[in-house]
Image 1 (spheres, rainbow, N blue to C red):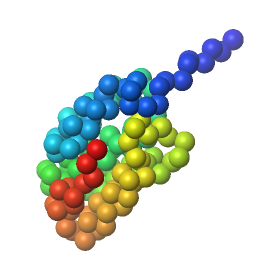
Image 2 (image 1 turned 135 degrees about the vertical axis):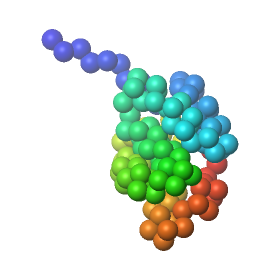
Image 3 (image 1 turned 90 degrees about the vertical axis):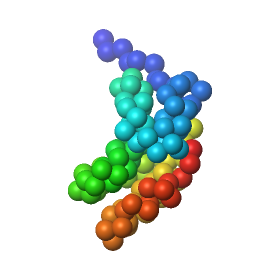
Image 4 (image 1 turned 180 degrees about the vertical axis):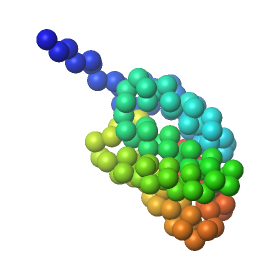
Length: 122
C-alpha cells in the first residue's frame, strides 16, 4: 500500500523562508536568497521554487562574471517559472519569468550587469 504525503502549503504564510528570500533578493544577496529557498524546496519539491532558486543563482553568476553559468541557470529556470502548476508561494512567477526573459536578452547582448539592478522587488 502506497501512502501519499499530504500536500505542502503553497502560500507564503506557511513558508517562513519566503519573506527571508524576498529580503535577500531585494537586498541583492543572491547567494543567500538561493540558500534560503533550498530547505523549502527540499521539503516540498515544488519546481516553481526551483526556478526561483535558479534565477537567483543566475544573478549571482552575473555578478561574479560567470556568464556561461548564468545562461545555463536562466535556461533551466524559465520553464519552471512558466509552468502554471507550480505553486507561487506568494511570488508572482509570471513576473519573475518576464524578468528572466529580460535577463536572457541582456546576456545575449553581452550587457548583463544593468539587468541585475532592474530586477523586480518582492
